[in-house]
Image (cartoon, rainbow, N blue to C red; front, side):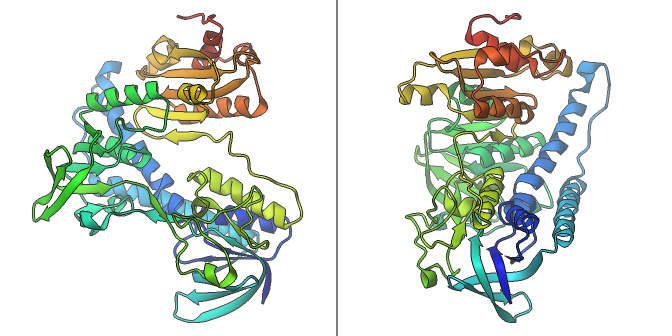
Length: 459
């Protein structure tokens, strides 16, 4: 049977691509070896955010006396805490299955392998296999946690972000290798649940990719939360025993913990899918190079999501999936990575879009900056969440907003306004001149825009 598009992978890139293809009238098949939704829905974005939401409730109960409410001493039912995560995930997976049925998208559970530029072999879950013909193929096979073989990864004592989501009890102590986004999110979750958490990061700071001032603040706040940080050092040796894991750092210091989470990046799922059969080349890390239309070196074969090694975020994968399909269907759509919001669901949240101050310096831009603290925002004080700030970077000549960093309550929601401003080329003056509702957290964005010109009202 011939299809207009066969998609390998049903994650946030693949399933969104399939729906857009169906909307545009294409006959489409999705090959997925696990559940629809991919890593994001089943082992990443959604389950971790369900846990983050649980810790927010727990933190609120613990801080309730500040609001004149005595909630007593909250008791954590860890199995129920984790079960709610699974229920949220299942509900969303069911929703995607419904959308596939609604749009008459065919799904096959199994793994796909390219035999030629127009044929795919599918090895099904039941042991059978099938060959299908495709005018176009989209590779959306995603990524998996990277592990160092010498660290003794076993999925029990030494974990990745996959296994830690399936724990049946909270460890008394947790050592996290890697102070990036994933490591910091899990650090916040398990520290709130009562674990003794230590982060080891080889870079001088955790969250090294964000605004330097934001990273410094997060280090301070993590320490206040009881999280121990060991930065600027790597791992020399890992030894596992019956009572957990012992890790010797390059500094010579030894750290012991019940369990260890390895969070040092992702590896691309490009092996064994027949790329050599069709002449699709891969890069040094196993990624698939693509052009702005998401095409590989073979014109009718596209790649989207993590395998492209552009920006490993679910919303980027979805945008790439839409771009790939629209190009297949004769539309002219190109990916633009200059305006991509990035969110970290720590406590407090961190979100950014566009460039940071240090990036402006590297690019030779004498940018103007405006910063406004949440402690001067009435809504933040009323909610008891006054840590953090909004910082806006603007062009010194045109006043156009080049980038925004937010550390504080609901930063992941507030960044949407900033992303729109950067996308549309809005100026700091235009954003400042837009009336914002009071009392809201978004007033911090308006005041930061005013601060670019030294005209903040409340500081």
